[in-house]
Image (tube, rainbow, N blue to C red):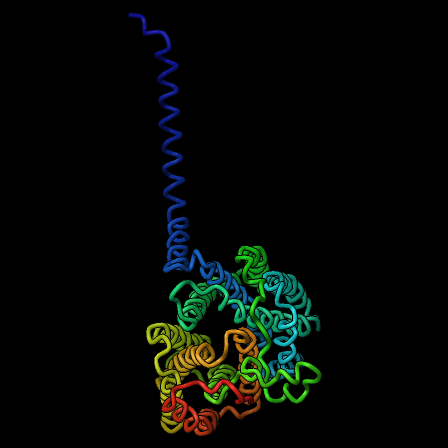
Amino acid sequence: MDEPEGFEEGSRDSGSGRFGGSVRAVGRALRLPVTGTVRGIRRATHAHGAGESGLGKLIELHAVNGAGDVMITVALASTVFFSVPTDEARGRVALYLAITMAPFTVLAPVIGPLLDRLPHGRRAAMAAAMLARALLALVIAGAAAGGGLELYPAALGVLVASKAYGVVRSAVVPRLLPPRFSLVKANSRVTLGGLLATGAAAPVGAGLHLVGPRWPLYGAFVIFVGGTFLSFSLPPKVDSARGEDRALLAADTGRLHGPRREGAKRPGLRTVGTAVTHALAANAALRCLSGFLIFFLAFLLREHPLAGASAAVSLGMVGAAAGAGNALGTAVGAWLRSRAPEVIIVTVVAIVLGVAVTAAVFFGAFLVACLAAVAGFGQALAKLSLDALIQRDVPELVRTSAFARSETLLQMSWVLGGAIGIVLPLNGLLGLAVGAAIVAAGWLSTVRGLLASARHGAPDRPGTAV
């Protein structure tokens, strides 16, 4: 019996259709983990109006920033720290600090005021900071391979570009607040996004390092190039400086002349009250402790690892504890919002001080990890409380500038703490005692003023310059 015309051709079409459908199904199954993860991240970052306001884009950009920075950190740590014996590593890191951190400390106070004068190009400034780090990652890759001295100026350039990005980001957040969103909650979301990205990128960077010492830097290049384009996806309103002015400190008011000097009595120009300055000093102590612990424990644990663990595992455990504490502090800060920020700062600094004293007296592996976790927790929560005080006590006219200047001081405090950690002998009791003394100095000098501010409650904006 003859087959109907077109039967064989239809069978072939049907078979090829089934094969094509199977290929598409397999493709969808392979893409699902990636696309599902991306959609899940996008839903989380754009929730509660963050997508409409543009805050979600900033959260994603900060995550890219954190991932790129940790790639460069992994590469530099392997080049400067892990590749040589401990004594030589201390010399290398000291040289690294001298060549990079010392000029950075001089440049850091300039970056904030300089960017204050360029408020209309914030997206371009963030993109430039990303692109600069992408190119410098390639320079560092070449220097690491050939042992060239260009490693140090390139690392300085990375620090300056990272600082510039941080200053601009602090100024951008208030522009992207969704309706009924506090600044503390917005900053906590941005910070948490960066922390999660850092935690995810760190093992990727370590894996790339196993392929070759330059591969984490190539990864950083790709990430920062993506961040360059992502910077321009922020809403155009972040480039607007409408209604803004520069926050002035007491030292600035003495340099005013002409019409601006006559206008210096306006509440908008004397903006930083005593509550903010005391909170900033307490945060500086915690940031100084953070820098100190990073450098001191890095060398201490390399020479004297935690019980039953190698040096690399010991450093990983302490780093993981600090990261977990930081993430927890950020989450708690978002939950507390802006409730009694002065009391929160006093309390968390006191807790960090208590743990530091305990770890110094009863030095041991568990207490070292606890101190790292509590220090990370305290730093994150105190910083969010400082943000709440700036939002409460500083007029909106100059709030973005106040954020930029406060971040500059905190960065310089971290550098100071790191320098102290480098020069100390590798004695655990002595080192943690010094760490406790740093926190005690910040707490004792600010507790009275913060508690007095909490009792009075009302901000003291006019006439209280610092």
